[in-house]
Length: 411
Image (cartoon, rainbow, N blue to C red; front, side, top):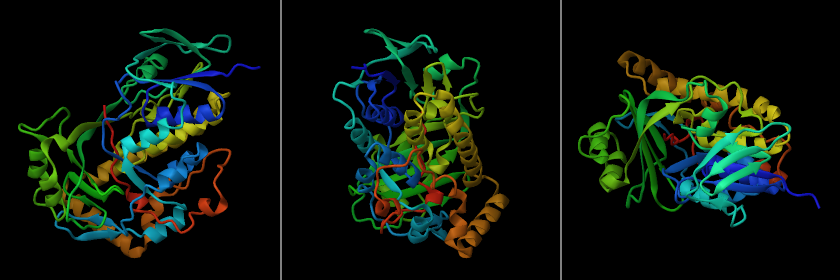
């Protein structure tokens, strides 16, 4: 009987768990090493677009996650006074991209991913170091406090400050500050009825979106020097920056406690890596291509990475070829979008808002065009979904995928 090949995944976040699940389905023996004491992620919500949902179909999880979508009707883009700049069309987006946008808590997604693995596959409080990336004639080696592990494949899924990336590409400069910080809350806000929206101000944005469990996911971002913190607490900082914005922003802030508010500076990898693999080791997610969260694609691209890596697990150069160009282009687009929606020039803002309103008036298809080539991606090798489900059936996008909710990017 042939012994199963062994994969060691360093990092138990969304990309790492998806990679582990995809490799497990292909018959690999998988060990996930997570340095934190539990898999419960630090963070708030994540938006999953049709591209990553189709990737989740590969591991049999797509429809479970689609069922967690909260119906919010059409949404759109607003100014701080509440004026609508653009209305998103759920019908047009569903027709264009063939599936829903699902917004859910990161912990919920992690729970579903972990359930795809054998009970003993995940080790928490298990810091790990890539000692040798291996080669054609030798396995990769990973050092842990409990000893050394040999592997046919090591997956570096250890985030934006990836030690695996540094080991593989020691000359790479690593992530840089994106120029803005973010705040996020997931809280109940009783008695508030609102359309899902994002609001663009001067060097500031705010978004408010419902979750299926009845809570509200709200996020904010502002241009600010790196390393800043509120002199009192971050709720007070949000009140200073956003307290006079349109409803439901004041209601969300009133419902939030200081301890509910998460704040993180945003970093991204500005200089692309030369490859996403070396030897028998490969990178996924933020370890490979951390990007600003302005397209909501960081987690989506990590999920894509994971299923493509499993597909090309016997040919890592093919994995790099499949992922490097795509993720680099999306990361650069996310940087451009950040410059647009966090613009500080009053004249530039006036032109921007006029252009967004005109695009919306011209029709939703034109407004959605910026997401072509992203949300319509399909995984290699197809999926097990039925043709009715693949076409989207009567499912609707819960928000405009051209303006996905701002995604977390943590150091």
